[in-house]
Length: 114
Length: 113
Image (cartoon, rainbow over the protein chains, first blue to last red):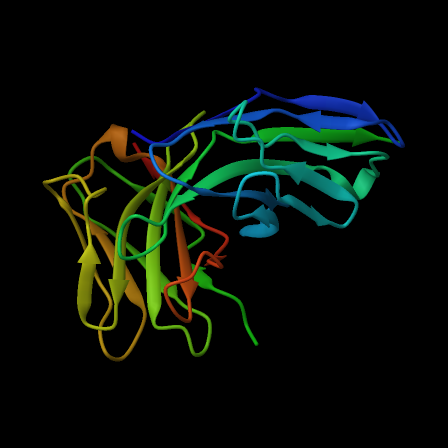
């Protein structure tokens, strides 16, 4: 079945460091891919998305490219800030059903130190 | 526009009791989704509801769990006779139409003692 695997955390970086959070997926159809972010005490917020192969999603300095050949959707940011500290979830949406069924990774906690 | 609201934020129940989790979708949203996150795992889909209808409950455990979204009022996820394995964070999301843009609430953390 469909699934998402993302790197375990926590990831601890210094401010202005480069960030990569790996995400790979398994899907039988043509899924859409997402990154969600969860700040402490809040719900998940959509960070970026890509709906087909080779699409690049970007938002707030974060980027991820939908790579069908490697079934990956790695999250990157060139220079992290303390305010980026949060839990990041990779997800795929299987639209074969009559609605978009989401599959989430287990989340990667990012700690950014000043 | 207020976001998706869930209450309570934290709920403690003893084994055998009932747990009721409430979700108020964003204004104008008529689609509600429930997800469960067990410790150290990702969110897992449980059920998708529209007003007064359960559209897909393929992720719901066969026993003890039920969900509803009445014409008026919040969506309710009910867990009867809770067991320790039900301890988890339960997230609700809503959307205006069938769309990937699901808006999540802050979650209810259920602890069964």
